Length: 266
Image 1: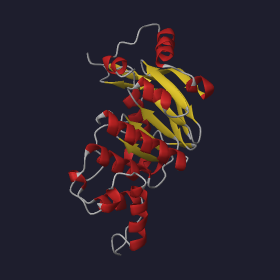
Image 2 (image 1 turned 90 degrees about the vertical axis):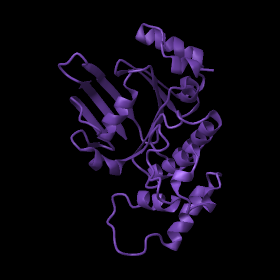
Image 3 (image 1 turned 90 degrees about the horizontal axis):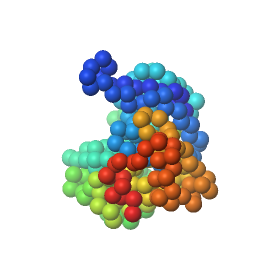
Image 4 (image 1 turned 180 degrees about the horizontal axis):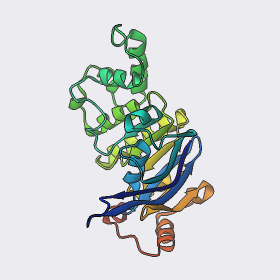
């Protein structure tokens, strides 16, 4: 479903601020893979997701989604293939619009617009059913402005909007990092549920090593813009945080010096 082939990306070329963010990165995700992504500051995690989404062009290499080479496509032309949820709960929804309006916009993405009434009865019932599965009481608040919701509720809406059309690939960019632990756990639970029920292929960037081990069927670790660990199957199921740290140190030749990751390992 996803192939990243020898991709390089350098920012601020030829200046004192030159930074090679992706350093010949290679990755293959099969249909239905749920892969968690971890790594230290500047390892290339968000840069990789931005490269897939087409936020900017890569310097060299190729990115294929479901067999289609999207490397030369601008961001808006890759949108039909992708769903994305960002770290900031305020991103991805329109605060001044109602829950039902936000969902209707997401459901119509990439489709031709007509002059018929905005949201039909059947569509409204579908949204109510989907929201009821979240167990957040949102199915009874569909006319509430999204800006009045809590961060967790808003992130749940964004998750539903990103997956309502069943994208080829779901990108979760530290989508629980700005939430309190209880709310983060709920959003992760919803993520697992949606990905499993729709058999989605997903990449989830996280700084939390325990979450990276617990969720998904694969785990990759980045360092200096390339994949240095790729763990799946029984090895991932039986992995502990301490073992993951040891694997990182062996693969990278150095200790992990990332306060954010180390503080969240317990």
